[in-house]
Image (cartoon, rainbow, N blue to C red; front, side):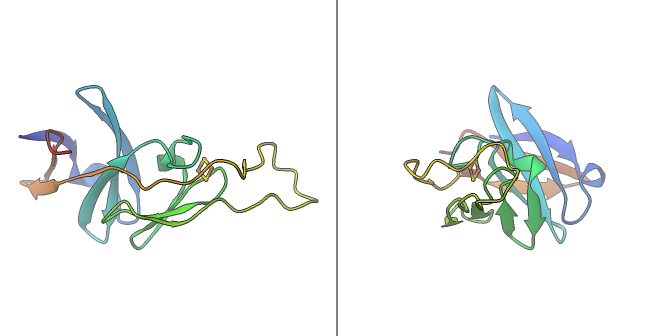
Length: 120
Ligand code: FES
């Protein structure tokens, strides 16, 4: 069952928006006018992905820069190790594996974005 999640005009091209639907935290991604929905928590260490960067279909985590394909949720790369001279306060834990993201079907209609969260 598709549920209304947002209005298209609220998410600029290349932008993201976090939404909560029936207790699930998701991120809506606008990839050139096509919308995708992925889980909000990074597959590495649960950073909030809407704070990252979206380039085409690739979402980069803001914390350790793992990358995901928002069309499939596939993890394309894991965290980038901390540089020795980096001021970054939260180094990536090399023991943590990076899993892919859950995704949900998205439909755009009448300026609204709907997500089928009953799938998966
Ligand atoms: S929390 Fe996203 S790469 Fe570490």
